[in-house]
Amino acid sequence: MNMQERLDFETKNYNPLTDPNYMSLQMLSYFTDQLKSLEHRYLAKEQEISTSTLELPQLEADHVDRGTREEYNFEQFSFQDHEDSLLKEVQAALKRIEEGNYGYCEETGQEIGVKRLQAIPYARYCVEVQSQKEQAANR
Image (tube, rainbow, N blue to C red; front, side, top):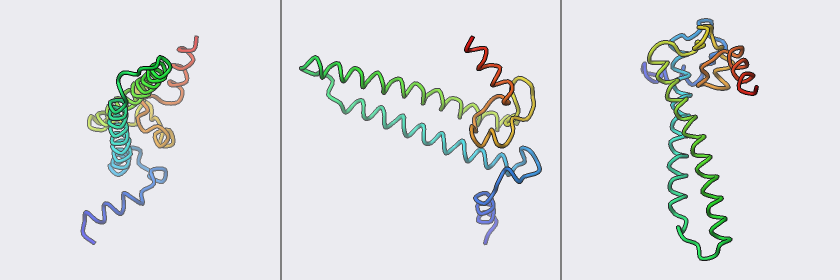
């Protein structure tokens, strides 16, 4: 097994929860792979939505069909807007990896935590700060 094959094998079998070094090179590689996979998925979904919207007939003779189409378009654009937002978060996380501050809360500088990053690899805040932000938004 050559060096690249061994690194690929180690990355595939890597578990960040067992790594004693927070944000080690291997952990950063693991999360980079996770984020790039999400980025690819969001970009593919964006293309799929754009294509499916263009394939539908633009003018409907029946007002009910027109209303149905408008509702479908609204749902697709709302979904695409959400996906675009997530894509931007993923790309921002990849940039944080490049800059060397990935995995740390943008407000407190504390570790976000491996479990949280496994659930939300593009997380920007630790649980405490995120909770405070959500409570403030709900007031």
